[in-house]
Length: 328
Image (cartoon, rainbow, N blue to C red; front, side):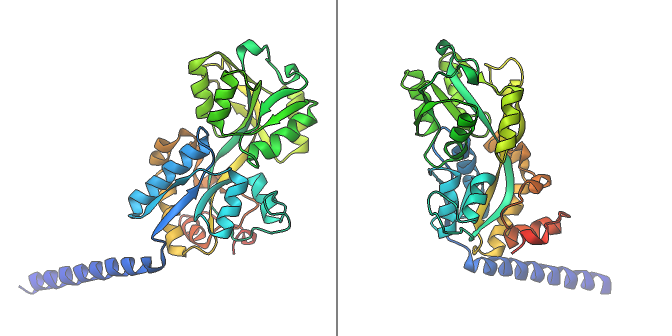
């Protein structure tokens, strides 16, 4: 009888503790945002697909109202997160470094220091697409004065790709627009080339190659070496399996992307967002297959932004070390 009574008392105590813990968890949400927005980029690009899907995952699992928002991409997302106009966003390390140093083209002289990193997304390859009928099969084939679409104004592509092509001796007429819109312009003959900087597969390119014949143009070894010397990028190979058009891997360069959050967001909220994102990589890959590299081992590729304290807590609980100079 004594043992049975002890078990009943222990069960009652455990139940009380669970109720208390649940109540505590609910009270911890008192400073959480009631809703949130993720700054993405233009429709037709990987940022929009990845960011909107990620927002839906967070909203569904954490019981919040949230979604993705079309923006101008990484540079604008830094500004929107810094100002608090959006809670979360996606950015690339090049624009992030410029914004943190007060060198953003959107706000020169204003250090955007209210932006913290959460977790790595994927590498953004810089790649070039032209219609097969254009006769453009290499960067050196791009004719003087070619109309080149570089994506939304102030995006990663628009910030870096024109300078890269100028370094390689290409003279062009610069055009901007969303990736889907530029894909339509390429197909209609309104532009000659699209210079993409986006996670692969790029939805606009996948759609193009279903509708028409395209050339996906790689860098030569010499062109790649020259760009690596001049810009904050790394070597990259676009796998042949990425597109139907490719018969073998294509040489390119790339830049890493990270999710970001306002540094003043509640620590518990960001901890739960980070935990959900990094402990469910299968569901992240369902959002976009580029999320295969959205894993904690790749935090080493952020050497620019401080990590949010909520993210730091998750990393340290799971055995990942964050350098002191990347902590607030």
